[in-house]
Length: 269
Image (tube, rainbow, N blue to C red; front, side):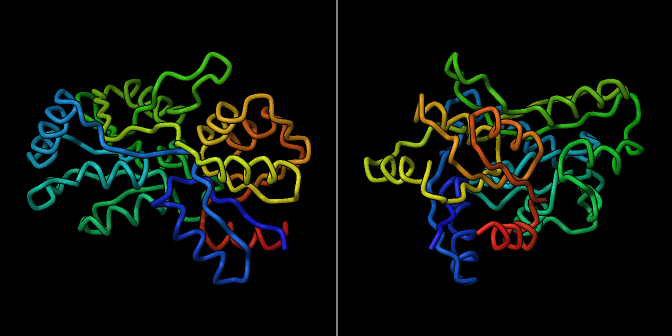
């Protein structure tokens, strides 16, 4: 039986693995990103200040969370989670981040995201729905992750949508603040995981990629690997392009909704 390798960070990968296994699909987590909080003092001070500002009425027009990890780390506090001021909008690039906001306790009516039938869940689709909210002089906070400097052979792919959105906001006269609340790192693979990846390069396994950075990290962990017989399913055209550039012989694409991803996997196996 062909298997599916879920490359999300381990805590994000497990629900996908369980959902796949529940449908009789052989699935295994092989994380290509590791996630942790920004632990230095300056980052912690900036986070504490942003939380206070986000609770202050009229300070921010909106807070944009780039991912579920951004939500979890922004609201992770020793005290009760600090939510947003009632009139501050919470922006998301897609349904996964929206679910994280709801789980944090934010009301549905305060959340804006792309239309449910959007071709892609991303900053461009979000902007179509929220651009009319912005007036000159508004402040918008973008809560994001940070990555280490990439190796020379693997240029960074993070932040394309975030940077695009920040540019549109500035063009509309808004003041944009960027806040890193978590760090993305290369995972530390065991010898067994590395051997699994070598086998999966050519044995018909399907690699599930939900970020371009995961593909870049795979190239960094396995430099020189031949991916001509590799098979990938991606959740965005940018990720598909990165997988093709890495040399994957078969690259499929699906919207990131879980039901659609699962259906695409079943069709591909």
